[in-house]
Image (tube, rainbow, N blue to C red; front, side, top):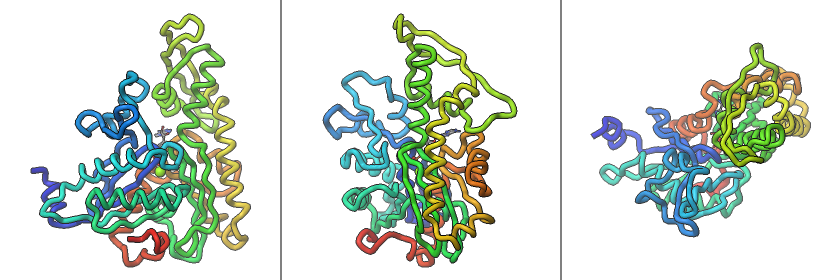
Length: 351
Ligand code: ADP
Ligand code: MG
């Protein structure tokens, strides 16, 4: 038996989940992040039957992206920050919950799930029902930016503005929080996926080379930047020549990728500025000293903080471990549930 199972069975039965558009993370109070896998599922086309005896979820499924034959559908059920397929989202959630919680001695966990702020009441209900069917004793929901703000230790309960910018896979969420609730908020569908798509289009146009999303994502992570680098970078990519149809490789630089990504970065900047414009003056003035905190995988793009400093005039901080901020926030909340009950969502979705 794994030592963790032993401890889990006895101690904590609570579980915090960051149900992200790109990655799902599970945080157990007192143990930290126990699972972090892509929000991807592989099924038989047109069915909800998860392949590999129900195990084609997460890392296993992501490895199949853009490599699957017609007999396999590889799906990202939350790709655009909305739930595209309820049954597949449920299968995924169930798989992750069961993987972490082995239902030792029949202890059923309380589960707190951070969800994209754009999802509808019907979608929220579906998430709650899925978690219940996966064995939850009680389900709570919280919107991502709130969980992120708590995860990075911002004083969300105080009458002071805290600002988070969460650049995820499908969406960028910008929020100003005060007294436990979101004061102004904006969600745009420009984030990591859009950066990847933009790289694909650029490479096709500039080099007549077709590349897939996994390659584009690698380029973004290896050499992507939002602001001039002290030392510019380069990498080699491989794809299929759009004219000859043959495989070929090509060297590309960080300067050209930065130029290509200017448009999506501008849109993220606009979302931040719009949110600031709608923030009450007293809260806006708090931000001059408190600044904003960047979380989500997109916070790791080189120079994104410098770009935002330049464009907003505010201090900008990249959270430590930005990919786990939301999940850590859910773990912290569960540990202090009574203290934080007021920041959880409305009565109708609090179970
Ligand atoms: P979500 O919360 O929507 O699931 P995440 O916060 O997990 O999203 O971030 C996933 C996104 O971050 C993906 O688009 C991924 O390519 C991107 N990402 C991860 N690491 C890096 C990095 N080092 N540099 C740039 N982008 C990154
Ligand atoms: Mg996220």
